[in-house]
Image (cartoon, rainbow, N blue to C red; front, top):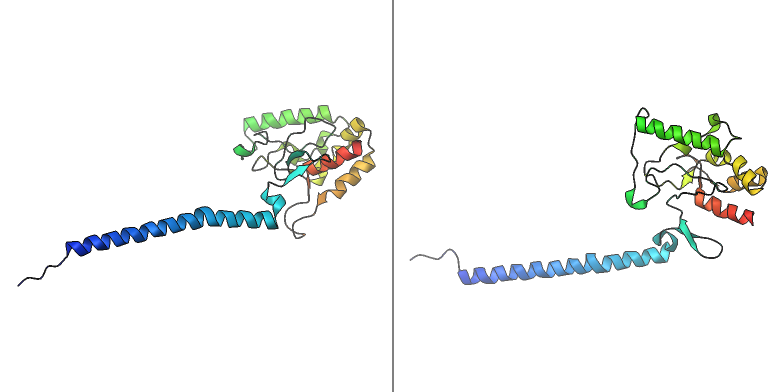
Amino acid sequence: MSVPLTDNGNDNQSGGSVFLIALRAGVLFIVLCGIVYPLVSTGLAQLLFPAQANGSLLKDKDGHVVGSELIGQNFTDLSYFQGRVSSIEYKAEASGSNNYAPSNPDMLARMKASNEQWQKDNPDVPLAQLPLALVTNSGSGLDPDITPQSALVQIPRISKLTGISAQELESLVNEHTIDRDLGIFGDKRINVLKLNLALSELKK
């Protein structure tokens, strides 16, 4: 007498059970990972770090949003401090730079143009004092910060255009200088937008 090795009825039941288990697990993880986790993480972020969670936005004295402290922007008014060069015009959706080598012809042409523009806008400051950081891209093209020296060399121009004394502007720069992280990592830096918001107050 032969014994059947399989039972089609049991196989069908087993297959149905496996499907239901997989379906339940799928639904569970969709709910946990697609709904519960985002809601919890968003809620905690809003509770613990509301400014950062909303983009680190900065407002003027009238409460209008003027930008994010994390993303640089162009300041076309020469009576304000200028940030670093950005080959992507500070467009956050296009983060990155051309990563040109120092010998690249396009890089040399752009730096030559930047140097000429600097001499035109800042006739009282020799080209030799122009910090390299002011005429080169950051890795992201979105850098919101400049070095203290990059701000100090702009003071003669801003003082002439605004009538604010060089001493007042230098104090403003010093007040907004952020030290190295933990005192040893990176360089001292200044957030250009925050500095210009403070400068706006001095203008009035």
